[in-house]
Length: 289
Image (cartoon, rainbow, N blue to C red; front, side, top):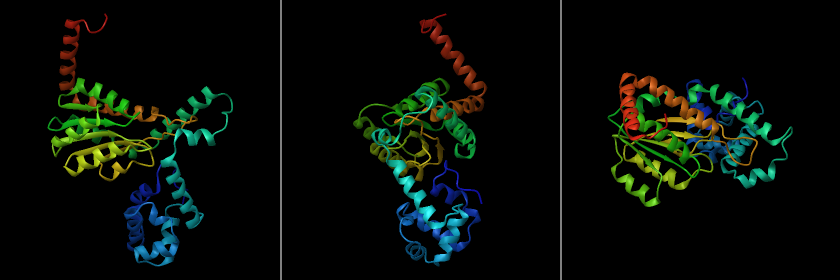
């Protein structure tokens, strides 16, 4: 069995391999997911008691997930997940040394690797399903992001407004976010961007929106925002780069790939809307030439 892919956290591995599990192993998986990751940070015996199975069942599940080093390796991976979710730029400055070969080359090279990583995991990003959802005019679309990722939400909004009506980008005050919740329901889709260190007000808004019946499309990192638990579709992009700050470049590539799918989904209707927008712009002299 190959080692677990670093792009997938353990909870994602458990869901991905659900069909391969025996009934007893499935109980261990359910116990882990019910209190993740805390349930996996105790002893084998404590996890076995939670799941009402034998100790060897826990060991077999860990091996099935690809941890050749057994339960200690599995726990180390869990601890690394917890640490990665909490990393700040200050922490990364303290742990990273000078880049070999120059900062610029190292940084751009690291981004090439991350973009290749996104391409190798198309199952983590259901573009066609998301495009169909965003193209459906019976839904209103609300976009929301965090401190940095709100700019990704803004880019997606600026494109979508050319393709369809019924859009709103929440980029204002906390009061605006609170007021926006009143109208969200089953006829709404919330597209939300939330990357580590996950933003409390964004998470809270998305959870409440989902509770009111809104569909949620989430863009996040491999460690996954808590919003993933209520999202219908989840796009995960690596954020690590040879810099103290996380990179939004892979997530931006996902946004642009989604837009390409959406343009294909819309077809003639989109072309007519774009023609009308261009005519309006030309009359008002919005762009040169």
